[in-house]
Length: 227
Image (cartoon, rainbow, N blue to C red; front, side):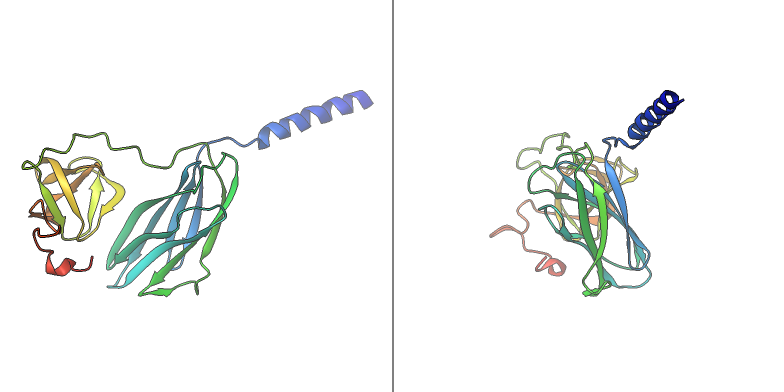
């Protein structure tokens, strides 16, 4: 009987160990930010991504930021947005040096409105485990930039979501107001963006000279001074 009990215990122990051995996919956490905003964080060996969603009912300015991390990393602004409207954006932050999969990490995020922290400056924290994944987006692999004289530079006059195809779905990336971009292809009213990849609705843009904003080049639009 004693030998049978010992055998049963051994089987249960091995089964339990197998059940708790962690896998190595990307590890994600959810941070509840003030005002029913949410940040989904994915931890990988090269860094982490923060995907923020939320809505503003009024013309309020909000900023979501990474305040700190338990391992040396980039910190700072995830997004800055002025309502009314909804946000669905992702930002990447690199570790100072790669971290081994399975390492535990913590992160502190904050959201402010009109320059005032909604958490009193302490933020909201998340704890997770680094997955066996790469968070940094793949390098641009689209068409090359045309030679000088054949390039089409545009100025973004209102925030333009990056789409996965002409008229397609948002990738979570955004070209901000007053940014410039080279358009290397068009389909209808959609333009393919050089380097960033993806497409934008050209209704968000105006055409500018290729020397726009450069020394002795085309002047900066009045609404973009200091941007």
